[in-house]
Image: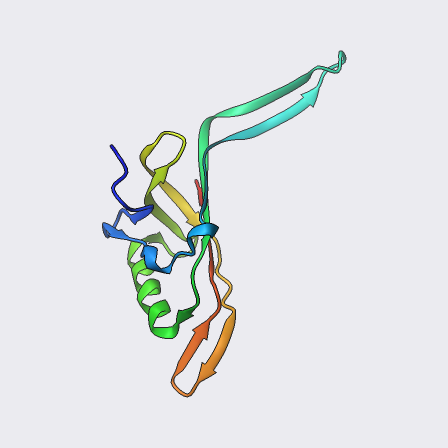
Length: 136
């Protein structure tokens, strides 16, 4: 499949993570990472690496500054897509820059820190929020 104009889609709700909120130069994906299970050197000082036959992907990015209403809308989309709130498990379809195709996988979403930029009587403005997804 060729690039369809989006980077991340929530599979459960078939909704896109809004690109208008992503700081593009912060978007980083590391698709198909090897997982080292064991690494050692033998008596001849030769290095041996045992890797899992499975691969994992990491996706991270920051948003632009968000208003409270923007965050509420985004939070609702994330909550609707979440399979398990306790471990923050979500299924994403994402653009894989290694395969040059879309892949679907289960990810854990890391905890979010909320840096507050300004507070008004009925609004909050958050500084850039970081998102980090790691494949199960």
